[in-house]
Length: 254
Image 1 (cartoon, rainbow, N blue to C red):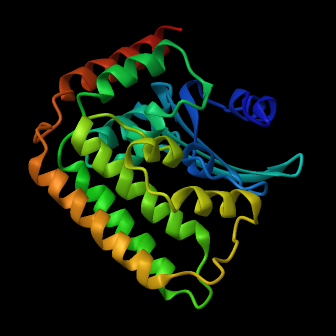
Image 2 (tube, helix red, strand yellow):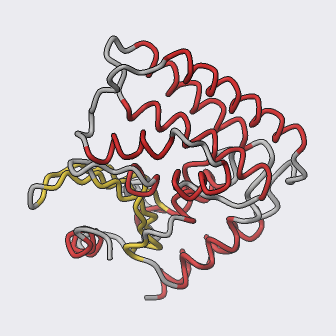
């Protein structure tokens, strides 16, 4: 049972539009949440036809940050049309949201998206993870007092990308990934993050060591991309098109 599940369920139940799904992302999904980490809720909502076809358009994105019961909550939901479009791009974020095991609101809609989502994975998703890792590494290196968080994010996205290229499966939990990669230093880094504050500092960090590891894992991801047998492009466009029409018409008939 995840912490604060009742609170998270209340947040999803209070949304003004029906949700296709809502899952947890961020540090809780990645396996290194601190006691003061916020909760990143990610969802897909379905706008009614009158808020799509008429002049009064409904929100394609709902983005709300709040503090409830002392817990910081970050809720982001995209309308199905926008989210389905993101699924057809090189966007690892949306795939991780679909395949997150931390489900707050699920059901048949989520299971269907997971099935379709598998046919949205391409070898070019490697570019998403290479770019994200480079940004997090740059953030880590530019800080005068380096934090644990961007370093863990760097390792997490590189391992997720390598794993995706090699297996075609989306896995975002760093500890689960490390069962295969067996990087001995990661457990201590994760413990440092979990036992400290969200913005905890990496004391006495070995920058030269982490620089070598970053370069090594980046090279592994680039090699995995070159060798990957994943498709060049998504094959689920028609399925997502049909599903979107089904959702719109179903909502109109209710």
